Length: 189
Image (tube, rainbow, N blue to C red; front, side):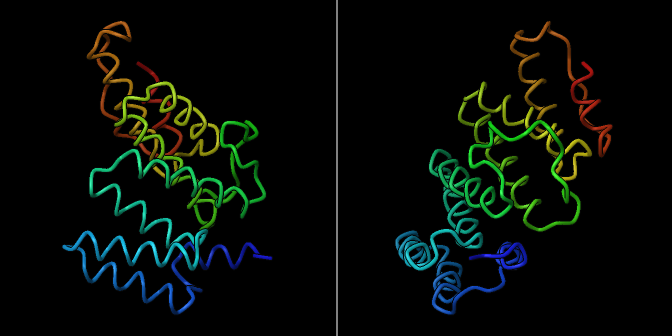
């Protein structure tokens, strides 16, 4: 059974089995060769399918390769892994409407929040507006102090709505605040 401390170490890239670490090093070393990179990442995934470092590497590979739907699929898997480690419901939509403790300093909590932020971003990019809005609304509840900076995405989402005329044609100012003030500024327009 994995402890919270073990998961925190995994999020930080520690506690990797040697064969997994080697596969990730190989993927990094061959960034220009998509076939070798994917082979190394698939080997790492086969050895440690739920290790945060493996999920992060897969996410980045797909994201930077502009395979956004695949990256979002990895984000979904990472959300389940993060939820289990934090003893949360595995479906982020069903999380209690309360802040997550540890948003500022706990590695596991920050992993979860950053993955949800990435998921929201990818949903925006994939024109899944309802999913993006729901994920950002959940982030506002889970991270009211905006420790992971999701309020900027909400401001971008609202600005896009306004520019299309979907939100009363009111311009949305760029979020220049941090913390809870960022959420307030993002949604004030």
